[in-house]
Image (cartoon, rainbow, N blue to C red):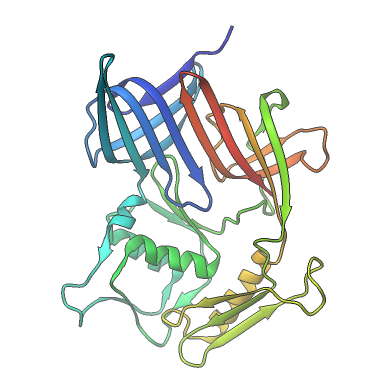
Length: 321
């Protein structure tokens, strides 16, 4: 007998469809809900739990950003568009009332700077790992005329660190790379019988084997290495420009070295559609067993899109290693 679908959305009854997208590269997750009845309004907090009766999982926490309704001879149907809690950082534009007294920090760890900027947007449920990067050692930095999110994203990008909000609404700033890392352990196995279609790709699209960092004044650093996938002496370069935060040579060189380690590699990915699984969320580690040795093994969930409706429940995933 087929399992019974479960859809629980805060303030909604008679839910017809749920779509939730989570991705490593899109640091604000989104959800679209269509429902016959709702008490939710713009700005209301919403949680979404899906799965099957007896096997459910919360997959989203955030806020309603748009509400639509349509009427027909079958009744009214609401469509709610929601974003996770980091949308508050996107919506908060930092603009000092006095341009001569902007938000300023000196000699501050990167993770503490991100915490302080997020707090401006009233995001205080925050955890971080030590980056070992200290900014504005000699020259104070200012943050103005940018959104809280854009500035924190700028910090995460130049350090190749990762900023995201989980399904419970906690914001994390961590060393989480977009592929398997040492110490990663699988949380569950995707049953072979659940895989509806699958494709594997290997590409050098994101490979960079030369990183140049520009800091304050004359501070600059370069890290480069040969790649077995490129001709000898050939370099694909990327520039990290951050004069406002790098005012020591050691920090600039550390940023160059770190980015090179992460970027000088091929991207190996698997795209698949599987029977709906509420445990599949971006940033999870899973095991996939296939007859092909190039696909079997542990993978990092780079993205997961959940779609529940009258046609059933499927999850579309991209895995990387």
